[in-house]
Amino acid sequence: MTDAGGKYRRDMGTLGVLFIVVNGLIGAGIFGLPEALHAAVGTFAPWLLLIGGVLVMAIVVCFAELTKLTDRSGGPQRYVGDAYGDYPGFVVGWTFFAARLISQGANVLVLVAYAAALWPVVGAGAAKVVLIVVVLGGLTIINIVGIKRVVAVLGAMTLFKLLPLLVLMAVGLASAAAPGPITLPQFSAVEGIALAALYAFVGFENATIPAGETRNPRRAMPRALLLGLAVVTMIYFGLQWAYSHSAIAGTGPEAPLTALAELYGGNVGALLIAATIVMSVLANLTAGHTSASRMPPALADDGLLPEWFGKVSRWGTPANSILFFGAGAILFALQDDFLALAAVSTLARLMAYVASIASLPRLRTQAGLPALNPTIFIAAPVALTLSIWAATQTSSDQWLTLGGFAVVGTALYFIARRKSADGLPDRN
Image 1 (cartoon, helix red, strand yellow):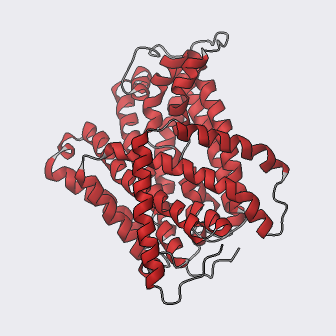
Image 2 (image 1 turned 30 degrees about the vertical axis):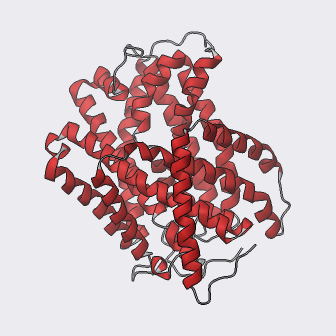
Image 3 (image 1 turned 90 degrees about the vertical axis):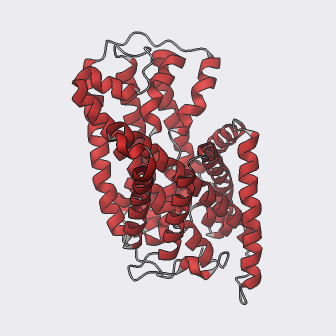
């Protein structure tokens, strides 16, 4: 593969990639999941999350292998494009970007909803609009002035959101009832909740996109991916164990971790977790903004989108693309009626997983390596099976929406190729 030409400043190290992995995984979902999991499978719930983390690790292992083969930005788009040519890579990159743009707008509405629980005035009207613009505008500015600053902000957010969760987990584990024998649930119960558990582990792939702004990405990214998923899996396991062995498990609270914090810490504990949820969603938005806004520059670098998207600021960042992403997310968020479309983001990710993993043997062959090694031989079949199964659990509407994105992207692709007087040749 072609190495990056030094177009962007490589200001992010392993720790920065780790922050993106952790915050890409931990959003708002885990705060509402414990009761649903417990209601479905009882005290087997922690083990279900552990099994989910182990299975998703197979996908992460494949991505870790992929990151060793390039130091250029793009993530899934880069892998598929280098393996199968410009157009397949463009479709994967464009659909991933478009879906992530919509979900960014949807996620900021989740942030507003949680913030309104603490400060009701921001839940409607002009104050709501101001909060949306301030949050997404602020993330845009921080990203433009340098990924080093993003890493610093993400580091602080990660600390403030993980510390309360770790304290709650420790207190909950210390106070948990003595576990009885493990009772395996009915398969139908596991099948009914497995997809929800799996969705708690998507988002790690965001960290692979800004490889061109990462120091020694072939070394930093594999480490951060593997460590990040392992850490998050153990946090999920510990929180679920603490909840499933508490007095409130099975009582149906709408905000289970908030209820658990209130059980052990009273109103102060509940308020702290509520604030933690807001911080968690904000950190998730920050990680998503940093990664997804780097997809169009990767496409522009290959001549698949206008050069405008790849223009570099004086801070060494793709400023135009970051601004485009921020403005688009604000416009979607202000619509306030499209939350159902956010589900297509997961489908786009699953398709990116399948296409990227399928690219691995060819990319290794291009690099002069054996198509498979023992690690890939074991992990790839598990990763592909899991991704394809999850994709089959989605609705026809989500497939139609994703197809619509692909059609729009295809039109843009051929327009860009036609307007480029000396466009890059297709790599097929």
